[in-house]
Image (tube, rainbow, N blue to C red; front, side, top):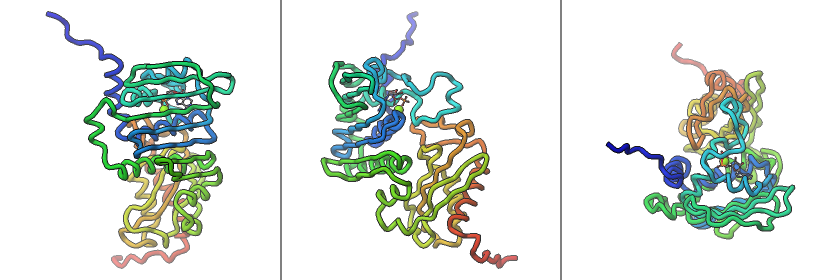
Length: 339
Ligand code: ADP
Ligand code: MG
């Protein structure tokens, strides 16, 4: 009998991996922005056309890549960010899987221009459906310029699955805001269809919040700080009177990585208890700084989920930090009529 198992060609393996990593234009935005941050950029421009369907471009002034690295960056599991299994427990970069660019290049037409400070000439590479079309030397500014065109051009089923432009653009804006909030020390701009949507100069977190969400937030922010040997909390919560009906804007960052965490969200809500009407939620942008060995960021490819080894401790610290920020300890204790 003939053996029937064979390894899939890279282009197919990459396309399968892309199914995990790239759900929509916003996923590409997230991966490219995070790469620019890992490259220690000071200035990051995001340019989007048709909600990202036809163009997602990220231009940074970060460390750039050599010609060989630029070519390697499209290989699956190719990364400069970790080397050994031990490194997985001390991750401080946003990326580490080395699968984003390989995945994106499997389902789009990608063009990268990149130059390191020490190089006189940069590199231009075009990849289409995992196939390298050109690699040549070009003169270009220091840093990296990624263009991702015609997302899902070779996967009609995925393309048709995309929502309307306003819905896709909302996801793009969400990703952009998350990254911009986490890095007020980096300047960002966002253009959509040649219109400037955001122009965010560097500054303090409070200024970044106001620049993104509007002037009305200026008076509404309560500073939230708590330092413990195990975890540090910093950031802002909206004062109780500014709580909005519905879900509103809430951001948790763990070591500058945006996360969703229902349990910790509950910690904030419980701190606000009785100060805001039922069914409304407070604004918050909270940074949780913790030794990377106490968290596992490896549980999901898109990494918005995260596991703490001592979730209850983090819960208690957040709750007390928020209570202090909004001055709950000054309020009359609620009377328990049942007792
Ligand atoms: P990961 O970020 O997990 O390492 P990616 O596929 O996103 O994997 O990127 C692969 C590699 O390409 C990175 O490890 C990095 O060395 C390089 N790279 C990607 N984007 C940039 C950038 N904007 N500037 C400099 N190097 C980059
Ligand atoms: Mg990456």
